[in-house]
Each structure stands twice: as structure tokens, then as C-alpha cells.
Length: 281
Image 1 (cartoon, rainbow, N blue to C red):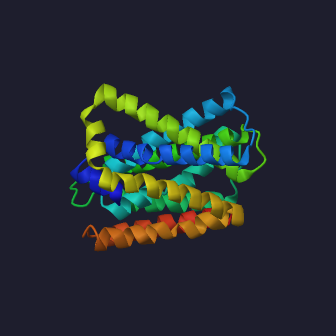
Image 2 (tube, rainbow, N blue to C red):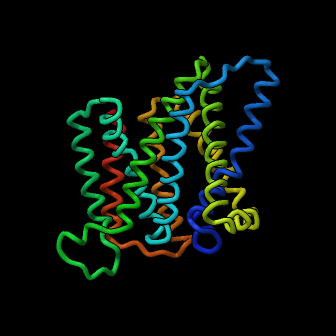
Image 3 (cartoon, rainbow, N blue to C red):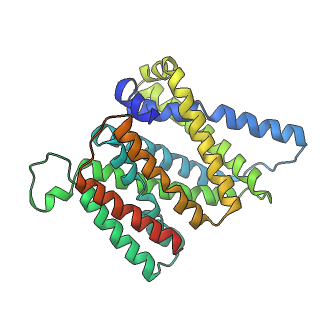
């Protein structure tokens, strides 16, 4: 919600994305450094394979976040979040392509149901287009593109964490998260310095709101990780789809946006396909 507010009123999509990382990277890096110092742990320096995975995942997540923030400006908040959640479906396809993971019959059915939901979400409200072109829109491309990029980043982050050589899942995840957010902060700072320097100052001037984007995204990442250590990932993801319900409430109650019945039906289908997919995993 905060990224939507900033990207609509204050920052560009890249500026709002930069705010997410610049206000979280120093915190997680400081936390990891403090933990290593306090415990006296000898942490091996990550090798080239780690940095290759980390950099690829970081780039994919940055591009995905820019796409999502841009999507928020063209569609209402709830629809934008729902399209982004196609990540869960697309991760099955990405996993099959990159890792050779098989797709069960239930998974295939879930994907087809999700496609139906995307088709219902595709037309922009008020469009006068007819025929097959009604299902092709910029917002759908942004949403599905973001989902695919988030799926790629997840695979790369897993690959990076496995390269650390550490036994403790918490420390492995923390070092990976610190490395990735540091790369994202530095990379986006250089990009903005080259292409849109005023946005750097704008992010600083918007710090009263932007700092919460960094803190909340960081807290969310840790909550997801700890949930995965307590329960099967499929069940965690299924419970995590409550975000779609919360985004619907935010869209109506906070942003005052109206959601068409067709969009509600599309969201229901897409949510159903996601739940079917993760519960069958």
C-alpha cells in the first residue's frame, strides 16, 4: 500500500522500488554483522556461484518490483496484487524449465484454472475493444511478467542459499538476504544516479513514509522464512494467500477503488488455482 501511495503521489516506480531496498539493506546487513561478531562465528566468504545466483535473483526481483509498482498505477490495488500472485502458478513452470521439476495432473488443472482467472482480470475496465485483443493489455503483461520474475528470483535465492555451506537455515537465509539487498541497493543507486538522479533526493525527502516500506518488507521476508521453518512450505503459502483478501479490503476501504464483478470472479478463480496448486504440492 505504501509503495502505491509513493508511486502515485511522490516517486517514480523505480524510486519507490529503490526506497524498499535502501531502507532495509543497512538494517539486515547490520543485524548479520552484529550476530557474527557477538557469536564469534567463522562464516565462509561466499564463492562465485553464490554471487551469480544472488545477483540474478536480485535483478529479477528489482524488475518485478518495478513492474508491480507500475501496475498499481494502471489498475486498482487488489487486481494488481492478484495478478502479481500468479508467481505461485508461474513458479511451477519456471521450476520445470530451470530445474526439471515435474508437474502433476492436479498442478496442470490448477494452472488452467489460473489462466481462466487471468483472462477475467485482463480487460481494463471501460475498454471498448472486442475480440481476442480484449485479453491483451499492458496491465496483464506487467502482472504476469512480475509473477514470472518473482518466480525466477525465488529459484535463484534458493540456489544462492545452498552455496553458503552453512548448516543453520536461519543464518544461511540471513546472509543471503543481506547480500541480495545490498546488491539491490547499490545497483539501483547507480542506476538512478545515471538515469534519474532527482529520485535519489526524492526518496530521502519521502523518508517518513519510505522507511516503513523498507522495514515492513524486511519484516515480511523474515516472517515468511520463520513460517517455512515451522511448517511445510505448501501450507505456509496457502495461508499466505490471505494477503489477497487484505489487499481487497485495502483497495476498497483505503483507496476507495471499485472492483467489478468480473474482477472479483477472476480473483476468486486465481486464488482457487493457487490454493489448489500449493496444497497439492
